[in-house]
Picture (cartoon, rainbow, N blue to C red):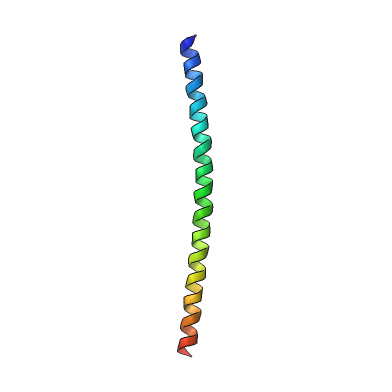
Length: 55
C-alpha cells in the first residue's frame, strides 16, 4: 500500500511540473511574439529613416 501511495505522490509531482512547464512555454511564446514585433518595428523605422536620407 505504501508503494501505491508513493507512486501517487510522484504522479502528482509530475503533473505539477507539467503544469509549470506549460505556463513557462506560454510565457516564452508571448515573449517571442513580442520580440519579433519589436524587431519588425525597429526594421521599419530604419527603412523609413533610410528613405528620408536618400531623398
